[in-house]
Image (cartoon, rainbow over all chains, first blue to last red):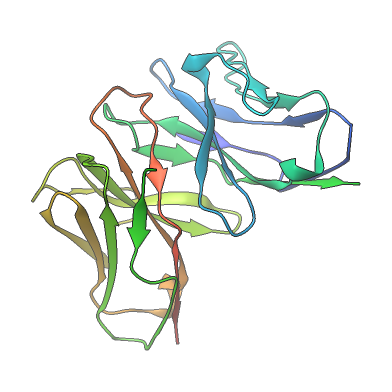
Length: 110
Length: 114
């Protein structure tokens, strides 16, 4: 079965602390994974995709096929990182057909 | 700047009404999608379309239908609204490309069925 799991509904950290948002997936093929973010009163937008292997706003995510994980990490959280984060798995041969995790709300306290 | 626009930000409808949610994109994208966003459930795909007049069921199509008469417009239709369809609805579009193509989302329509 194709599935994405984000085990934490809410993650609360202090400014400057490291952050790790967990994502595990179940997929029989070679996965294409994304992190999407929704800031307060803004639309859902792409944060990063695993194939790009880039760092966006200080966030990185490494695909671990052995553990079927794609955790999102940032070494030093900022207050402006507070948002809803969704891990997503592409399941169509065209982009946009996605299976999303349940979402993790990140709250960064001053 | 890429834009996906949903016609209403908030809607309140009565049980049994036929409801239309409209979505327009100005990026000449081939692919369009309707998702439903619920707390604790994330986003779930209702219907999608890879071309004009083409539609495919997603994971939760029951109680919904769609229409795509023009490339830029994708409408979600609730044939007979029920209270369990109270939710946030997100439209998205993406260009033709590979599995890693980015999806662009609208601002969402919060529908309340009373």
